Image (tube, rainbow, N blue to C red; front, side, top):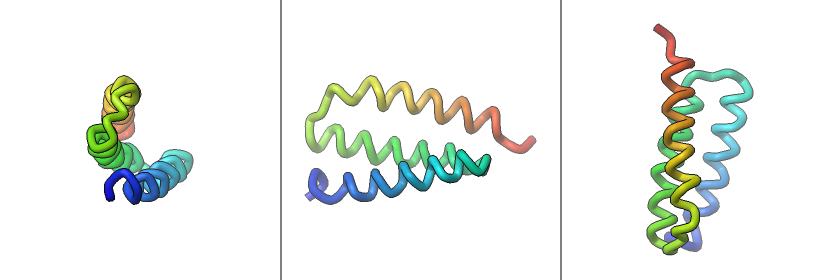
Length: 72
């Protein structure tokens, strides 16, 4: 079930996060981090281990961007 339906949610969240980032909305990177957690669930459920490096790299990028965009 996860392998069938989660990609639809992952796609929607990725599009939404990209739109938020394009609008320079500071919470876009938090949406990306949450989405990345769901990607990790999908990776484990489908055993798509080749996507782990991408997932790891995006955790770093999204966290970095969130910290840089954070309102002080």
